[in-house]
Length: 179
Image (cartoon, rainbow, N blue to C red; front, top):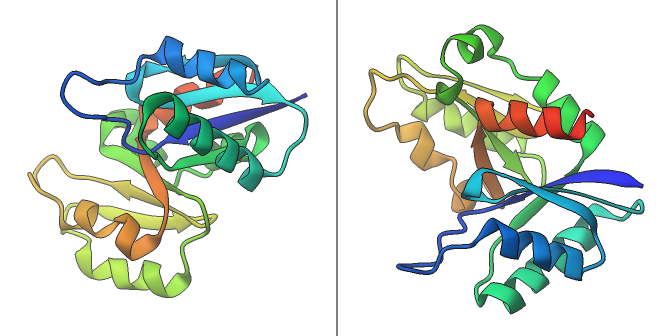
């Protein structure tokens, strides 16, 4: 059995219609995926199944989500070892230790091209830092800058399908899959 992490992009369904994590786990079990568990109510899912192509898992989960909750949501899947590698590759360890909620990674379905990373440099604020690692974008946000231009620049339209998680979530998911 292989362990996987699935990240759901923006699971806000509208007023009075939130995704209940027990319903998400039930949906996952209905697909024949084993031992589904969630982390916080923002769409972080860990499960096991036989070794499967990532794109096939993403399609299965997205189709089931649409059927179950009536809305399409992009879902990015990583193998446990790839998630552990992502967490270990955090380029801002000192910042993460001091302010974990100010460090985030934009986890991408497909690696961000070098030219897109270069174009993002123009949006990095004076108290912010950004670094691409393994095709994902890591960002350290400043509390001094109330609205980050960089945050707006790392959109689906500019970079492709991806979703952001702060260091607290990255670390806790790594703990879940590292057991």
